[in-house]
Image 1 (cartoon, rainbow, N blue to C red):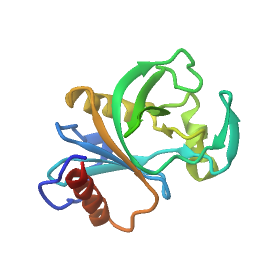
Image 2 (spheres, rainbow, N blue to C red):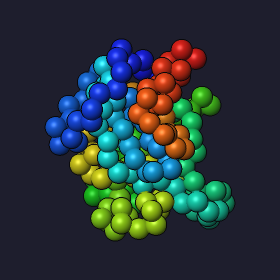
Image 3 (cartoon, rainbow, N blue to C red):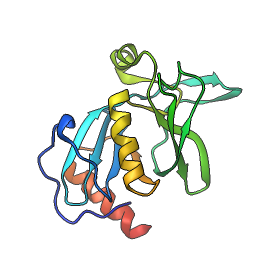
Image 4 (spheres, helix red, strand yellow):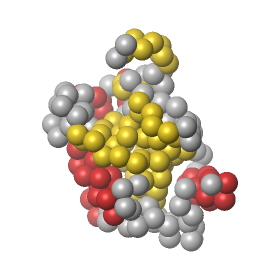
Length: 174
């Protein structure tokens, strides 16, 4: 993960956010809130949808659809043909863990307003769902960082200071 060079600042409105080299993406899977964080501690936040908290049968697999909590790296930007599951643009940022490529990713959904209004925003099959406009920022951040985006999913963060500590700890361990 990218180290922060200063304490977290007051939030920047999403509409005013400008990606920078070294940004990290953190998802709180308890509140279903995403955070883009600059190295200097500036950040923005937005709603996300994460996995259903139940066992599902999907794409030939049976598994617990809750989004796993771990450190990831986005290492590929793919375009999917399924414009229902992956939104009108089909964009999909693939998540990789320490073992490599995973079935998980970050993507929009065709009926985002419906998805974002239901089930406490626990409606995906494990992926992180974002709005098309947020996907624009994530793609811009991914591209700005040479085709990579450090991502962390974690269940519950009491404060933004904990987010900073998490990012700094993972940088030291990595």
